[in-house]
Image (cartoon, rainbow, N blue to C red; front, side):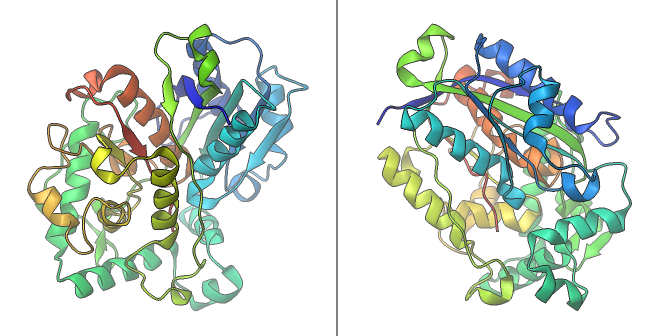
Length: 371
């Protein structure tokens, strides 16, 4: 089985009220990625998206995006996996290249969430749950994550001040990212004093709502040199699932899917957490960023906050994390921003984080699956 490389990347800024359609967002990111890769022919495309059917009343995204991109005839698939839709689309594209059936594969994700009422977006977010069983209780998606935060704090004797260190880190990293949605520095005190959303979560514990798209172009490693002088090997891609609802899980302070997928990826790549130089994790809510550090093997349960306190996750620390701002500051809690972790990691590997004012790094782990 052959190896896979990333040869091109493109992403839009994450904004609220972009005024652009789903197609326009996707085409912008895809065109940038195709030009970056220097390719003409695309063998297939995989488009990650979760809420177009509900918010835009638009399905059949495969032909829609292929037509918008001027690639009619190219087999194009919509892939849905809630927060991990972009990651699952990438996994599908990687398998297509690994199989030898296709060489040049475009994978991406797009979402448009602004311009809708809070009840509409809240209803859409809850479609990631078992609606028939959970939604009738009246709890929201933010409420579910508030339960996680409360249990995590209780179980591991962690304070809200500790959790607030994660959004502080992300806002710091987004300051010089021109595509970030929130380029503003915040303090722990700012987080704690921001308006309540679902106790204990405050506004600055939560990522925002926005529009965006991100795209990668994949190719066999042996052909990557035909297109770019700086390909990045994609050493492994893994997907796993967990019980869908929190009440079905024995411990809501850990995500089994993240642990299983990361273990698979470590085995496939012959790497371990100790080998990783830069990290991108899912931080739609402050507690999730902290939990991800633990689920991916970088800290024992309940101890990840110490990494943040000691500065080890800062750009000049031992494990630079969310170096472009994460979901919290780069933007949006759903698919596009979650997926842009892969292009961010790609840029980290390709340019050595020079734009992020960090030392050169070699190995990155973008975690794009959640819950």
